[in-house]
Image 1: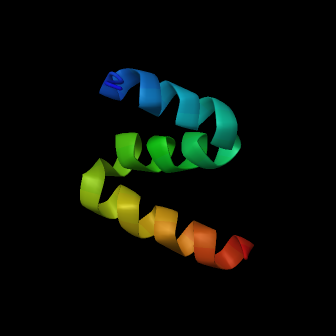
Image 2: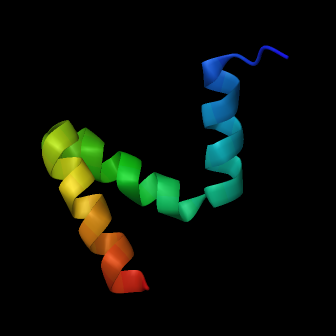
Length: 47
């Protein structure tokens, strides 16, 4: 079964919702490296 990558991303975004939005927002604003670092910090804080 072949699934387009975009479809997987969209489905994941729909399922995870706000978490994905926060991570994508961080990445968009801060660049990939800073965005990923911030995302990991945010996830660690939320747990």
